[in-house]
Every structure is written in C-alpha cells, then in structure tokens.
Length: 281
Ligand SMILES: [Zn+2]
Ligand SMILES: [Zn+2]
Image (cartoon, rainbow, N blue to C red; front, side):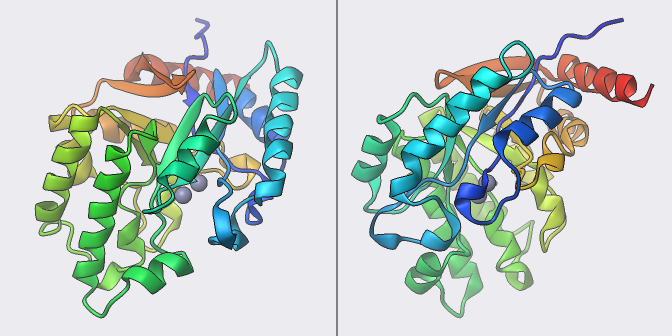
C-alpha cells in the first residue's frame, strides 16, 4: 500500500558555515529517497563583530544563502518541499540583531541554539566547577525560549558532551526541570537531534529522561538529523520516533511559515518504512 510522505527533515546545513559538505540539492535528493515530504535548510546564522565567525556564514553571505535555498526550492518543486530555515545562536545582547535578521527574509523555521563549545561561550562562562557550567547552559536555554525569537530549541542537552566527566543524568534533572517549566510557558518546541549518537555521550539530544519531562509539560518536539553531509538527512528518524513514543509522545512536528504542523508518529514511521522498503526493492 502506498504511503504518502508526511515528514520534514528540520535541521540541515550548507558549506557556507565552513564545516559542512554538500549543497542543498544533494541533501534534497537524499530527503526524496528517504520518503520525506520536505526539508528545511537551517545553516548557522551570521552574527555581528566576528562572533564565532569560523563556524557560520558571514553577514556578506546572507543574501547568497537565501538565494541558494530559493533556487533549490524551485529545482525540487513537486518532489521535495525545500524551505528556508536558519539555526540562530542565542547570545545575550544580540536579541535586537537577531530580531532584525529573522525579519529580513521569509523564514519557515528558526532553530534557536546555545552552543557551549564555541570560544566566546567558553571565555565568558567556563569555570572549574563543570556543574556550574551545566547550570549556566540550562539557564541560557530557558532564556533563549523566553526571547520568543525561535520556533524550536536545538539539541537541548548539548552541554553534556563538553562536560561529560561531570554529567549525572539523574541529579541534573533538578536543574533541567525548572528550566523546562519556563520553556513550557513560552510554547516553543524543542528538538530531538539524532546526531547526538555521533558525539561524546552517544545518545540523541536530549536524552530519554529529559524527553519524558518535556512530554509531561506538553512541550512539542521537532526532529532534526543536523546533517552536515547529505547522507545524514533523515538519519535515525525511525529510532528517534520510537524513543518519542516511549516517552509518551504521539505526535511529531515541523514548521511551515513559522507555524507548527503536527503529524501522528505512527503515520510518520509508516511513511519512512515504506520509502526504505521501496529503495530496497
Ligand atoms: Zn547546533
Ligand atoms: Zn546544526
């Protein structure tokens, strides 16, 4: 029985961020093969004053980025719905800059990210007590939600990979719960990022106990492979949705025109399994 494509890849990159390979048409080709309905290109946003410039597009490349995605949208019309997105860093003090940037193009989806590994974050916040650094990270995560600038919070326990020796998945819940209380009040979604499997603590971000806390607060979830190479588009999605079901979720989400769209997880899994089976034939 034919299964319609229903799901989006909501996190993918381009070479403009200087640490990804492959152009959006190559990512869109994989999205099509894997049975995805669409794909957001969400490359790392430009920031002012050379802030972490080594891992993001320059301000002077922003128009090129918007044009690149628009060209890919046209190229794949009728096959895969390629939409303009952005992965925007939350940095205290840059809120007005971000607001202007996000209004300067017709974004369909904006991920908000706290990247604790970048030199500017480390210089400002790092200290010997790594539990303190973890607390600062989750405080920043809650603050990022409260700006109202973002649709979904990317890889929302990323800090564990950079403070792994001090990561206690049980006791840290005392820090995570009040942050999630604040996040839930804003209505923002949070991401289940499958690329965590490739990181120091090999599990998706966030981990299952945190997903259960998100579920109990009614926080919606978007899926992202965080693909920095084309073959990772949609990577781990079926496993991710099984993890979501185990945490009590029945729906998964993506955004169009910055408005949340929900899909039943069972339907989404069936659509991807159908595509895998037809590829194998
Ligand atoms: Zn990121
Ligand atoms: Zn990313």
